Amino acid sequence: MKTIKPILLNIMLFHSIFTFGQDKNPLLSEIEKNKNKKIDSLISFNTDKNKLQYLAVLPSINYDFLDKTFNVGISLSNLSNFYQNKQRNKIELEKLKFQLIEKKENDLFELEKEYELIQDTYEVLKLELENTTLTKEIFNLKKAQYENNKITLEDWLNVQKNFQDRNLVILAKRKNLISKMKQFEVKIKSPCLKKELEYLSMNATNQ
Image (cartoon, rainbow, N blue to C red; front, side, top):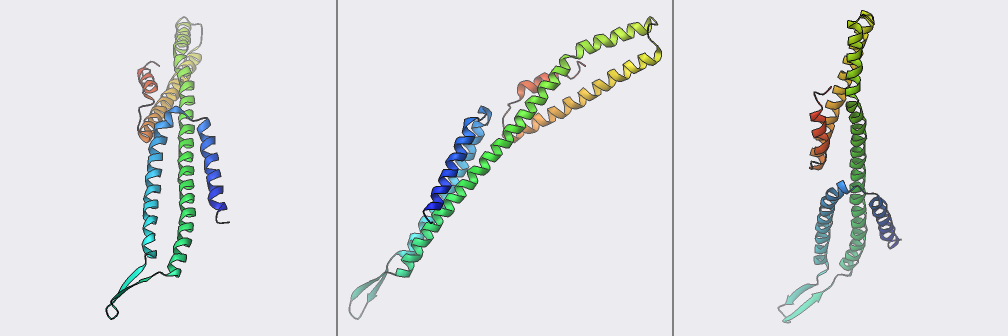
């Protein structure tokens, strides 16, 4: 079973990488590269640290002053422990590598979901903002109708309230989305939403 565990981990690792790599968002490529470098660095550090264990199996050398001879001793117990530790460390290193890559892929998956949600929310809000012109025209039409006594004061007040409520809702959505976009850019250290932020900023007063 000692040889099966690393093989299973490698199979799971390959499947995990292949599955995620099929539909990866290009936006996250640079983030993945940085995470891979950190993983490689950590694995390399642990590999180098394990290499020092060979010191435990170095033969002991003694000098007999009476016989004027050197004696070389090798501990079979140390050799056995070295081999067992080497196999265990190999398995643990494979497990660590799998866990790190799995975490990396989960992080990238969550970032991709967050980015897609931001984009979907932006597209919906953009449609609402583009519909502002029509809403204003309807508002002005109702205003003219009231001034010409074609609708009652109550109707006109309701029109004003609905218009103000709509603008307040869109304003709140816009501010909330801008905040989320900026937080996302800080998180991934990239101005990936610059175009969208500029559009929302330009339409801040066009309501």
